[in-house]
Image (cartoon, helix red, strand yellow):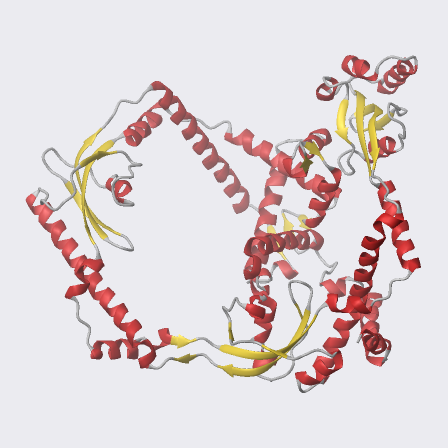
Length: 620
């Protein structure tokens, strides 16, 4: 099977496909494939341009988040929707406005603060320690390089600094806190009587005429879903691996790459002494280096001399060396240290001058070839099969385009034609659980034209093409099929009406008589978070007016499953202690701070000069 694919890829069709891709890259660049242009910035905020690359990066990050959150429900229609794009554009504008405001107000974050923030993030730690591999992998998965991630963190820290600074100036009045405390601690004596539709079902009758009338008026509510049955061909990469030949040279090359990777997989722990507080930092560093060469302890000198107070307390120790966390000059100097205890020459960065010590060093173990041969052989086989599978995908697309019947495609690839069950747009079983397969089954090419579909890549990497086998359009179901459903709807509606009428009559009677009947619940003195009364009743009772002396306050509360007549008989205000008063003052100040910041930001947005072009100006 595999050889026929190789031959096809080397033939005129396969060469033509490759030629098209090559021409696109040569004449138009990679942007022609991924849809990125280098024209005017798509977003401009107060004269500051936001590049297409920045917009695309944040859009890709948002799409990745949606895929992770929605799982199989993350259809292309949702992921690529205009609403997602516009949401990202709006976030970019908001971030840029706040960044500009932080600059104007003079908020600054040092590179050292950014580095410490990154190293301290639990997401990047393994066993409580910063792990460079985890750090690099996670930021790359989210579309960042070390530099772009540092830039984002620096911006986020400055924005947080600005927000805290503006919010911290807010305050609350003692009278506000006192009034809020009284309301929160208030107790109310409450009684309730509930009416449920189910209690009136036996009193309701529905005739055949009622059912017919409802059906005639609401027939569009009883549509059977559009559905399709398809015949399909499915190809799996793993099915090609048995045909792959792996030579000894292939295994040796893989082993050489493995050895090189293991040798590069090193872990360095470092310390430093920072000189940053004088005009002659270089001379101070050289003097300290001379003392080290005379045998003094690096840890002791760090504690004595370093202008980095945090690491100085720990003998200058910084932890594991990670690319992208430190400045390039610092990182390269640390990388050049090869022996534990070795100290670098003075290194100048934006923070000052450093002496860097290699505190610890370890390298990954290299296993002998005999021990890893089987694993490497399987890796080579899988890689070769994957390479061949790329050609297979092109060949499958070509054959699907040319063939009139999917059986011809199956014959070329020596596989069986499979037939799906009935699929509707909400199907989640079997092959229909694949959202790409499901959406393609309902494409115009398959449904309307009866042609073989484009190639669909399934979640596990398999490829599939399909052709319509049978199709049923959306249609109104006959009355006989939905009569019982309609009868149930009408019974519930009429029972609900009876319950509503009974509740309104009870409310009118209570208000007129200023007294409760024997079938009411016993009055309870409750707080706002009372859980003994039916759900929602306690909170509702605190929205009712305070009753006058000898009176009661009552009203209806409607919910999905019942109608409550709620009565408040009495209100008690409790004494507020000093500790609670102080806590409420703090909470109110925090709320006022949030409102102040929102007002500040709203002013930025109202007065902003924003221009949208190209992809950013397209409405959803």
